[in-house]
Image 1 (cartoon, protein in one colour):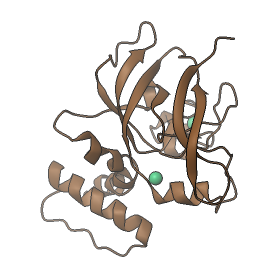
Image 2 (cartoon, helix red, strand yellow):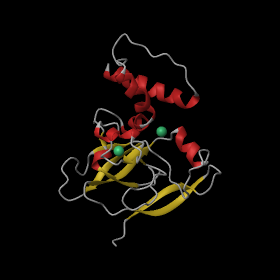
Image 3 (cartoon, protein in one colour):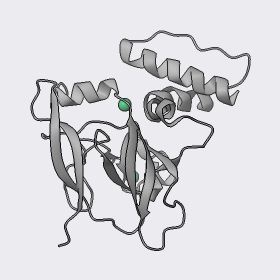
Image 4 (cartoon, protein in one colour):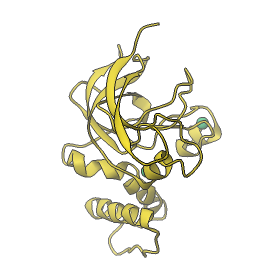
Length: 205
Ligand SMILES: [Zn+2]
Ligand SMILES: [Zn+2]
C-alpha cells in the first residue's frame, strides 16, 4: 500500500486541553480528492469540548480544527472542479454516505454516517480523521467550498462552522434580507455564530 502524504499538526494526546506537535500521514489521494495547503483554521468551541473529551468520544491523538481555509496544491487525475492555486474552505464534515434521504436532499449534515473533519472515522479505511490544525489536508472535492477572492481567507475560516450554523437557518427562514433583525438569546458558543452570521448577512444583504 502506498504511503500517504507527510503532515505536521498540533494534537491533543489526553483530556488536559493541551496541544503538542504531531507528525502523521494524510491518506493517498483517492479519485475526486483535492490536496490543500492549510492557510488558516478557526477554533470552534466544539474543538474545546472534543479535545477535553467532554463528550466522551475523543480519539487521541486528536488534531482539532474544522474551520479551514487553504490553497489547492494538487488534485486527483481527471478532476476539473478545482485546480492548484484555488482558495478553498473545509467545514465541519468531509464525507457522508451520499445515498441516504438526507444526503439526497443535500442535507448531508444530518447523514447518520457523517464523517467529521476532526475526530471522525473515514468511511473507506476506518482511520481517524485529523483536522485543520495541520499543514495539509486531503479532502473529497464534494465537501469543499470555493472561497471567493473578495473574502479574506483569515476572515472566512470562522464562517465555515460558526457562521454557517446560524446563516443557514437565517436563509431558510428568510432573515437574510434588509429590514429583518436577529434577536440574540445565546450561550457563549453561539454568540460567535450569531456575530459571524450577522456579518455574512450584511455582506449578502
Ligand atoms: Zn464548529
Ligand atoms: Zn447520507
